[in-house]
Length: 330
Image (tube, rainbow, N blue to C red; front, side, top):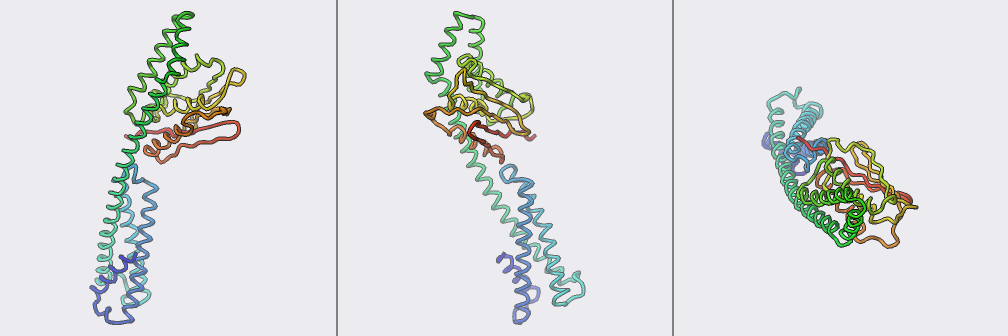
């Protein structure tokens, strides 16, 4: 604001250099310049506020740059017109109308300087946003790497393999056909992890197919102790980060104690533009390893993909996580 006021004083002096040597005129010009500078500063603030609500720097920095610059031009032009009219026509009454050569020349000078300063500020914000995007991209890659590592570690750890091999051994003797299906489901789990480890998002249908294979293995192990209620259309045209839903399902199993008399009920449903995973709460006496890290990992990954947060709602009886369902542009 002070910079704009100083530039306006300079331009006023250029258009009326005698005013700089007259105390009364100089004071009047100072008041005019400060008022004009403050008005333009507020106009830029309003333009940025509106532009931020329309397009964020993180989603589309180029469009945000032009939105902000266009809004600044419109609002600043209105402020310059009103302030010059009030000052020259209504207050000092040096002219009868604002449409005189002197006043128009002043307004043109003021507008040129305003555009130049605003363009520099918006350019700075553009490059700042570009740098932040680069940093967030690197952060996302680190989070994805941690997710891939954690998923592979969980699926190939000795307990997972031991439990599934025991289940497979029993099925081979009791039901060879079901044993073959078990092997297919197990292979799909590993195939999904390997095929999608580089993807930022996957279709909800693809994620759910993976979760069905994973849940098949877990339900063979837990039987009636694990109950699942699904209320969504997995074929909706929405996307989630890979292994996001499976992570929440696995968390429910890992952090709760349950059996046939006290089953774990997991509900998966679509609620508007959110995917909700909710389970009854029966915490283990000893917290599972890495408690809270999976949710934080999801939050970090979503923070790069969207401004919509991952919500966690918990009370004495239930634990609920809401994931934003993503829609790809273009």
